Image (tube, rainbow, N blue to C red; front, top):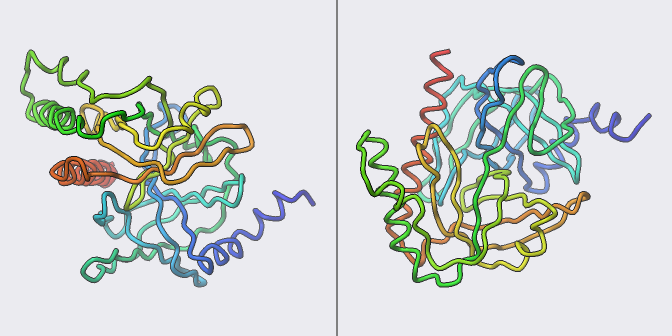
Amino acid sequence: MPAHRSRTERWRELLEQIAQRGGGIEITVDRGSSATEEPSTCLMWRVRVYSVSDDMLTVEQPGAAGRSMTLAEGTPLLGIMSVGQNRWIFRTRVAGVRPGLVGRSGMLSLVMPEGMERCARREHIRVSTTELRLPSVECWPLLEPASVAMAEAANRERIRSMLHHESSRTDAFLGDMLPEVGPKFTATLVNIGGGGVGLQVAKADAAAAGRCRLLWIRLNLTPEIPAPLALTSKVVHTHLDSAQNLYLGAAFDFDFNPSHREFVVEQITRYLNLIQSVRRAA
């Protein structure tokens, strides 16, 4: 029997191993799109697996910039389990929410999936009739950290004015404003966690991206966030996959502009709430 077939059949055992070593999975709200629709852009949350029982999977609540986000009971989810270069996708839903103690993430109880399907690609993730598209990210090496404050302030002003449907002659200028940066490269937002993001950089840009330590990034989460969300991040680890694409693990960095943290949390929270409200109305 092929190795991948054997692993697919023992997915519960793999989940238990992930929990035992303190590992995680990725989850996103299942928007329920059909095969005739364009793939939806989905934010995948990296969450730790706490325990696995016969009928329940307990994980941490999703978070961003050190803050927990709320998923309502009954919310349908898609999950991704990764072991090495192999990935499996499954459907579940939120069965319960347990708030965390002060300074600690809460927990989600997820219904144990009935089975899993193997994923072939990272950029477009398929399960049955559903296809997910991961968000794109613009990235620049940050050359002068002190220069981010004005660019982040411009990003806040642009997004807030667009949310309030205010037209401004300065919108184009605000959208193009950058701190002191090097040459741009693009990436895919693989996941977001409580403290940062996981980015996948194509082979062509891997060498240049691998030398970066500080990044200025713009996350494209439109239309829920009407313009790319800009922020500073610090590269904490990297590795090459089998196709020589580069994975960057980057932590959010607000040391140079602490006031920007609240805005980032506010926008990502609003994004998640909008996704859930649309799904409940469907």
